[in-house]
Image (cartoon, rainbow, N blue to C red; front, top):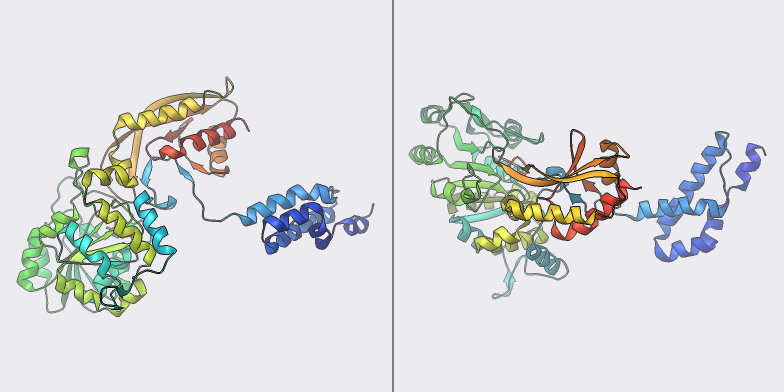
Length: 464
Ligand SMILES: *Cc1c(COP(=O)(O)O)cnc(C)c1O
């Protein structure tokens, strides 16, 4: 058969649509997706024919490929997966996951009209930010609060409001980069603030700050060294001391906490993370932190502090471009509300629960996964539960220890890299970590209701 003859035998799009499977596809999927998928498969076969091959091109032969293409195009690109990496606030995997309560509140507000900017008691226009203010100030002890899209925006609007065209004084030990896209010097530049670096990498003294004050000083800014630590011969200025000279020179003091924890985690062996409440008590005029790092809520940037400064930010027209959506409000309000009962917050806010979960509970979950793998044929893989280390992630708590238990899988029929890839590309993707010749499934970040599905994914990947 000549190439021409082969090409002429390729089915037409309409033929495929009118076939029995075609009619079935049109009942179950969007027409545009079905047509696109048919075209794609026909084009692929045409390419093969032009390359001199002789693929099977009956409708029946194409149906499976078309159906696969339809399914691929119908699936959402953003989709849930199982985080078995042990990194709790995994930036690439969506940072914090929401609590049940937060999710319920999002669903309620998303599907109904709400009083987002409406004062129900007065029957008139209300303020978007007023709903959340009370709960945040109650928890943090701050006078006032406002919320923007993320913490980068929170820092940016603080700089814009108090240091546009003026100097923002920052220690050289705190000129951090967080995840590549947030670098303090660059954020400063884009805000129009002039960065006035003081001190040295390892030591900054109070006099470094006071000596830097001039007629054009707009802000003292302290930045949490989120993802690194300077150790040894070091000195930094406390918020208390900075607040003193702030008052003396009438320069506001802002602290960017990054993670922003509202529970003292000392008794869970997590040190070095000063809570928002303490920083407010120490006298910071403004404190900024993320909604989806240690707080365990939705992506947001929270600004708390003295009323007169927060009110000034409230009047900044830039706020309109950073305002948060009603779904974020719903999730954030519910998350903050859960902190009214510390014990419940630790139990029900996933990020908090994962970070403070006792080893025994993590081990129990690892065992449950292992038990479900008993049905694997002999010789498929070596399986055992081993102690390992998890991480907080998200640039949070870089120094803290998170001893964990992981299921170690040593595949016998395929390489460990192949197993990692199969798990990642499965129907429900599983993100695990490789440690030398083992694949580790860290039970800390696996949810209880994911255990069964996860075991199924592991079995499927090992015996494919
Ligand atoms: C993470 C972080 C930010 C950025 O917060 P996003 O919520 O990611 O915008 C800013 N400052 C510090 C110190 C951080 O750790």
